[in-house]
Image 1 (cartoon, rainbow, N blue to C red):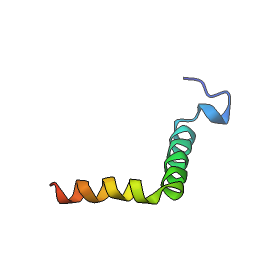
Image 2: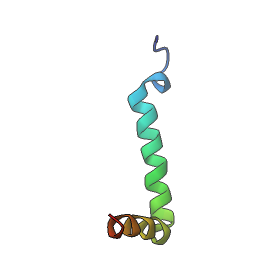
Image 3: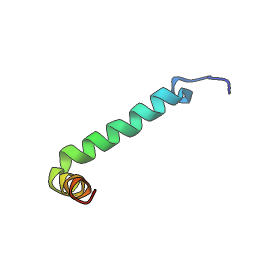
Image 4: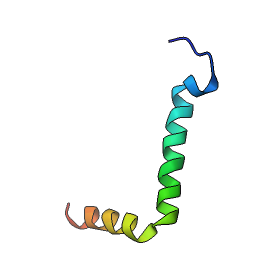
Length: 43
């Protein structure tokens, strides 16, 4: 795959996805942490 723009770099795409997830967590921490806590208790 030829990289013509910085958006073509896989690391950049993954960083954008992580950024979206961090913003979602920051905007609604209760629901995000609720899911995290239930995952820990059901192992």
